[in-house]
Image (cartoon, rainbow, N blue to C red; front, side):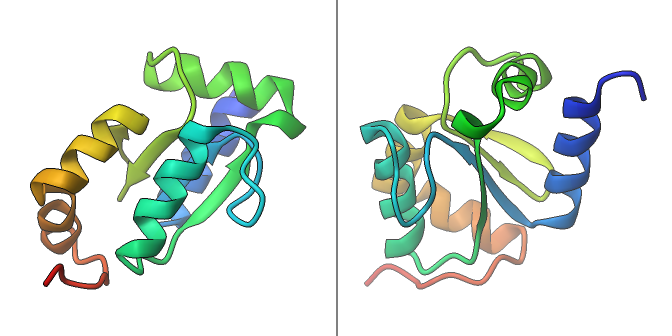
Length: 112
């Protein structure tokens, strides 16, 4: 594989059922959009891994090219690109995110 960032992304989204590429970390998000997606995943009690794109310029550029999506954060579930902050927020509000997680066998807290 000629692109190390692409190889890293493929490995991470394969090894981690829920993978979030974000600015900062889950404990210390560095942008409001990343913070919102972390908040949604935490609210649903979804186990997830993160990668901080601010620590690696190649990863920051690589993830945008990999998904053909220009913004960060980016959420992947079972290797599939789901979307960025606005899409995740809409899916959460409509219940579609919880349904998708259930359909993929991802443990999460059911909404009351």
